[in-house]
Length: 64
Image (cartoon, rainbow, N blue to C red):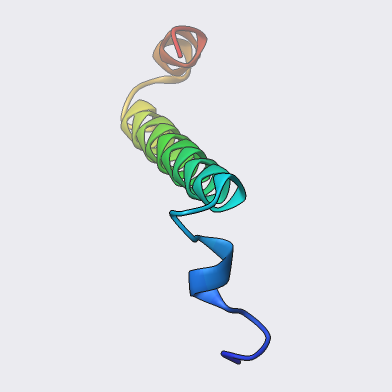
């Protein structure tokens, strides 16, 4: 696998392209964490809404 994916070559801090790859990977990881946190919070609100009556559920879901 080291022959196919050379980590040091792709994320080389001495080249402009390597630094750009580091920045892209950082932005992608931050974006992924943001999406995962939003999904987790949304599912928690849905679980909480199931504890209430149907009318209250609709009000809680509208506020999301």
